[in-house]
Length: 275
Image (cartoon, rainbow, N blue to C red; front, top):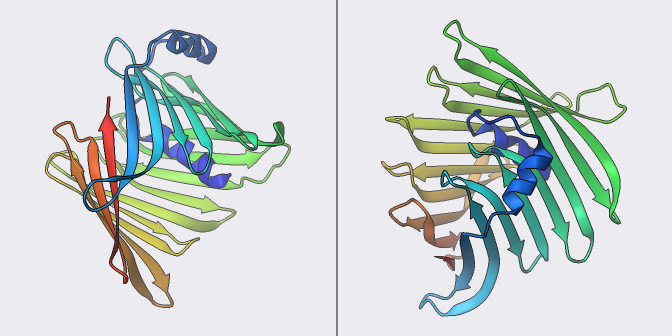
């Protein structure tokens, strides 16, 4: 549940903050009236490209400004479906996760005030009934030039005074996200850092202290992802457990990935088809 909540928070904070004044319900109705524009198929294949399995199908809608405002992704093996709605600038404002076996798992909704995300609400479900209610709040800090330098996102369970999770986001003078720190009840769980070259992402590192997982992501001169390395913490050292190479098209969309599992050197081939 916390991973889903964290994903929703981070997806929002990585976007800009310009929007027309509309309620979330109005936006959802407007987006629902749009036709589907793109479908992405994710396939697992063998080394020759022969199909092994269809892993996921993602449908999306694009508004008149060519911004993706809707995504619905079905993950076949887990029988999961995620539905996400985005504002005109790409901000996620409503998300629902469902299971064909368990029903609704969670919903997240976010509201804006003065062109900034001001609050959110996460609902966790069990047997299609609300089990957990988490309130999310945002606080912004700016430098002397009026540029955002820090955001603090806090969340706590309904009817509890103690803050459970805190995410601190730090920005460069150009308002590029440079680091994220996730804290739970005083313990640092995760630290993400971003490095840019000529205003484009060059490298991202993820240090997941809770699970002992460390990830390095590298990008090319266009800001397109090219590789991912995953390490597990073993006592005082790091053990590399996988390395993934990505092939992208001229738009930066991933069309193929090759994951090498270590130390076995077994390979997993994934291909993406865009319609």
